[in-house]
Image (cartoon, rainbow, N blue to C red; front, side):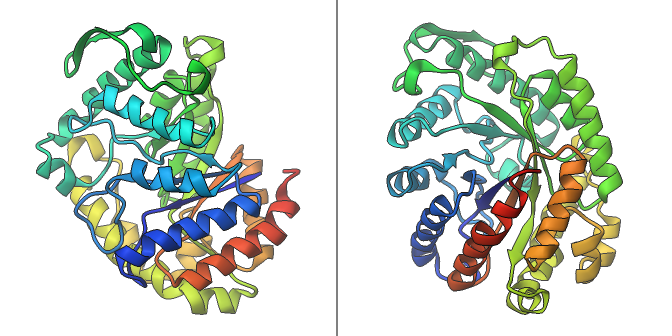
Length: 352
């Protein structure tokens, strides 16, 4: 099992100008403790929980402080405010600074306010995403003579620079929260990162089964297929004991689901293209820490033994990587959690 981290420089415990520097220290520690990958989601207009609106800038600083951890944006949002050429150029810049350690995860984004501010119709996001990723495929395929003609982006033959180290085609993944989006990830030959699955483990199993069937039937060239399966855990914290873990981060977990998560999902659930976000049960049980921790895959909160048991359960379902959102609590607690995971959990689960 691989273990990774996702953060948004949550400023609930530190002001943003300090939180960014804390994040860099946290990733540097994760790098030395054997974590697999690091990334941020691109977020706009949603303080204090989500504060990384220019992730590529932060990745540049992280690249210079780390040596082996993969830098994988989680997620790039290829909507109309981002030209695919700009996405490719910025990704390649971070790849050069990190000496070839970059991958990319993408997704449509689920923040309705962000879509509204940038003038994007939520009903059009599936088509925009498909067009953008097709354009990126063309760029990565031939950056010296990139050309694309689509509905939302149309550009003549041009040289895109800088380019990924070795002019390689990057490993691509897609964030997915519905059965349909897992199917799309497989069709495109992408790895999948299942995220914010508060519908239970049976639903997660259905999503992963759909993905496996879809990627087995993909027509993408074999050397471009990334069949890696990951799960993003919306909030996570490991303590020396379960009691200490709950004491140090239980309030953050409840705050995240009672406020940030519900606010985002409730807005999007009313949109036809996001109809899978049926959040009635989450609204009803968002104050039940036991339910969040045991009945959903969106929360991991406990001692090392709990983390190992959860990893074993997920590995049996075919999950190869667990991406933990460790954020929103004091910096010293995050550092303790990262060290504990690296010292006790990563070695205990490396054979899964």
